[in-house]
Structure formats: structure tokens, C-alpha cells
Length: 354
Image (cartoon, rainbow, N blue to C red; front, side, top):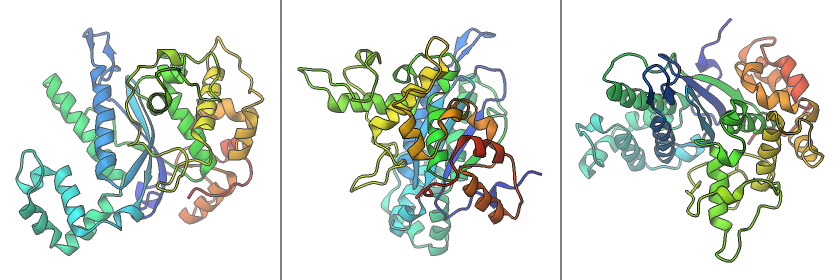
């Protein structure tokens, strides 16, 4: 029996979610359409640009994303603790920037009078605080924006996405790490790219290129210690984009990271996992990867299945067996789909996601 999303995606409560949307009409509305012989690949950059805009407006962090020809993935962390620190004026400014037509504007930043008028409505501001850390409002603004732009380009009306976005709750660090790798490796699993740094429109490519841009010097081309020597970093552009709008991998004194590992370890995790998914590469776990997997609570023997079939193995939530048991208790259910997968993929216990 299906459960309403509101029963497990709680507004005002921090959570990490894997969100997924698929196009509705023909198969290649974000790529090359063999029927019309038109290339719609430029729409992929629309999605990435919109994700960045929304991440700057909402109290929601984008942890990972992948834009494919027919669908897109994103992993989002809600931060109601951040929106609680915003003043009423800042909440009003962000909302009017997101919805200019609410103030009777067609575009441009809101003026001081419009901001002050909204900031004085305390009941309305309380509602907007919740919405600005809501996964549903975030995904709604993402998918609606893309659908309107695509329909305008095609000069058509109607649905662009097949249904409301799918949402999976990630209960602990083991599930978050596995799902991030699954999302970042989508192009490799689909046979569209050979390496993470060649995987266009993914968060892993952006992170690697940003790292490369930050660490390279005119005299030498440094290499991340844990990135394999045959990784084609030489193909990276000399001017790479910044990944500062993404949630950082590791925590520092200013920001909270999403994983209990360094960026170097995560790059290794993605790179080695991608090699296992390629038919021309080894399929066994590299000995250097096993300690990382054990530390995050993943079973090395089941890792390949976990990162290649993550979305089909879990439904409402993913995590350690103990996390799923607690989640089921909260929903008043005995069990649900994913228990067998959790038993195989993850260890019995691990510190919960913070």
C-alpha cells in the first residue's frame, strides 16, 4: 500500500532525499531525439543552472545530481536550521526573488517597498520559512521551470514530466554515500561515458574539475593522491567551474559536509566503483577501496549491486537495517520494500546522518 509523501517527508525537519524525475513524451526530450532529428541536450544545462539558482535561494543543499537524456537525479539535504536564522526581511526577499509575479513584477529584483510589505505579514512569513526548506517546493520550482521552458521551445502544451517527482529518504551515512555514488555513476552505467571526469552534467565531474582548478599550478599538474594514475585528468579544461554551490563532501570550520570522508576518498570511491561497472575494466573490489566501504558501513561483496541498482532495491527509504526498523516504527508499519537489500548492502549499525 502506497504511503502519502507527507508521512515520511516532514517539513521543518532536516533530512536527506534522493529525488528523481522522468520525461513523459518521447524518450529523448533532454538529449538527441531520433524521431525529429533534433538535439535537446542544451536543456541539461537548464537543469544544472536551475539547481544552482534554487540552492542559492532555498535552505536546501544539493549534494549530488546527474542529468540524463530522459530523466534527472538529485540528492537534497533540507536545512530548516538555516532558514530559522534568516530575518523576516531575508525570507521575504528570497520568496519574492523566487516568485516575482507575486509582487506584480515580470522580472528583476524586488524593491524595498514590496519586501517590507511582505515582511510585516508574520503569519505569511512563518509559512514561507517552511516552504523555503521544503523538498516539494524545491522540486516543484525546478521541474515547473524546465517544463515551461521546454514547452515554450516546442510550442506545445501539456505535461513534460511523467508524474510528480519520486522521493527516497536516505536514513544514514551508508545510504547517503551509496546513493551519491549511484547518482554520480549514472552516465557510466548507461554507457555514455568512460570515467567520472568525462561524465557531463554530473556533480562528480563538477567536483573533480573544481578541485583541479583550485590545485593546479603553472609549473605542474598536481594529481589527487587517491585518483588512479590512468585517470585522464589531462583532459580537464584549464578553467574549470566552481563547485562551491554544492554541499561539501567533508565538514570544515565553516560548513557541514555530507559524508564522513575526505573529497579524495570520495573521488576514489566513485572512480573505483565506475571501473567495476565498465565491461572493459576489472569487476572486483580493489583492496584499497575495501577499508573505505567498511568504514561507511557498506558490504564490499554487495557494493557493485548496491551502486548499480540502488533505486530499484529501495522504495520509500534506504539505510542500515536498524535505520529501516526505526523508520518503519515511525510510520506504524512492520516492514517495507528494501529490508532484504539493506541486510545485504550494509552493516548492522553505523552512526546516524547528522
